[in-house]
Image (tube, rainbow, N blue to C red; front, top):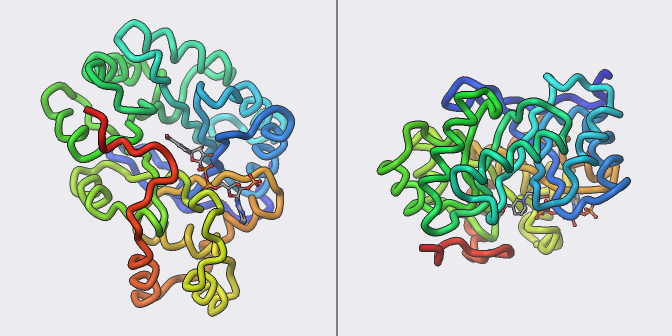
Length: 276
Ligand SMILES: NC(=O)c1ccc[n+]([C@@H]2O[C@H](COP(=O)([O-])OP(=O)(O)OC[C@H]3O[C@@H](n4cnc5c(N)ncnc54)[C@H](OP(=O)(O)O)[C@@H]3O)[C@@H](O)[C@H]2O)c1
């Protein structure tokens, strides 16, 4: 199927894999609504879909991809290992359930969803094995702080390709982003729209007005201009299209800075900083 809009640019991960810089989030997308959102997104030009075993929608994501007509090898699929599945053997078993749900024999990116205490090293060794077996073309982590990443030096043979964390203008994790960038770990923002909770922010709207864009588009442009991958979630066709339409304008250095100072260091999701 030809994409209606244009596709997002890609970034090259540390292992050479190309990853689109904008994708569709699917947390809380369920049933037919999820199938439809994935189909619409791929029709618009999205080529990255983010899911997790914990979202209970992997089969619907698979149907959306199949019904879109976009070939599997043109879609970058991310899924995640759940907290209850940590440990060497459990990780090996968990990816089989995800692959079966998604009706595919590989993931483009498999992430550890959360830095579960005590089991991180065993789990990562299993992730490395899945990577070597080709069941995941890239492996990474999610919700890892600098401390969790530093600790990986003690046990990791493969550096995580991606760290997916909550990140938006009201939670500008600059130090974490800089650390990941310096280590060659691609930073990926979840809740990039701050869960639609601050779309009325005057600064975002003023900057949006100057570019004839919405506050949502300004947030996504700020994140991708910082070098991040962003995965906004929507089940509305017009918003799915709107969120992809951010690659034909540019924020000035001054506008970037005005958005950066909106930071309130406020997590809308769980804060992993207290995880030992
Ligand atoms: N790794 C993790 O621990 C983790 C945690 C949270 C999320 N994630 C991933 O990140 C994705 C995105 O994060 P999120 O779902 O928390 O929040 P988000 O993408 O920041 O915000 C989603 C909300 O914004 C609304 N929205 C989307 N586009 C809009 C637009 N252009 N104008 C107005 N409203 C708009 C959506 O509405 P509708 O849905 O009603 O259209 C939805 O209510 C998730 O879906 C998931 O894939 C990962």
